[in-house]
Length: 138
Image (cartoon, rainbow, N blue to C red; front, side, top):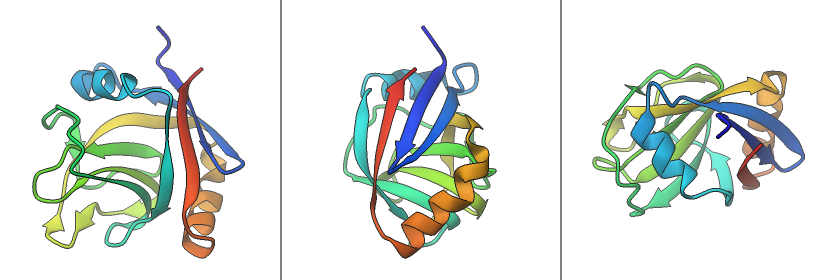
């Protein structure tokens, strides 16, 4: 099974690598959802990041390979607890947080192709609003 996923946000395409060795449970849980479609919006408290709010959705994983300071292109899944379940997609400088304060999410995907498009992703969600996003196997 390939460790690569295609992520499409509007007309932007990225290739991301599943971080199976570092976040095996998170990767396995997310793979069960594929292909996955949703809307992505500008993050409210985390800086240069977009997010997919998932509300009370239970992914069924705990914390693994978690961080509060992901690099651009390091995609996190926050399994819920202090705040709602969400996926965070940093496109620039980011400190993961919510209205309840600092959070740490599971780094389970890393953008490896299309990184030069990350600033455009930021411009789109900030100035044009919600965008369609799709995660699928390559």
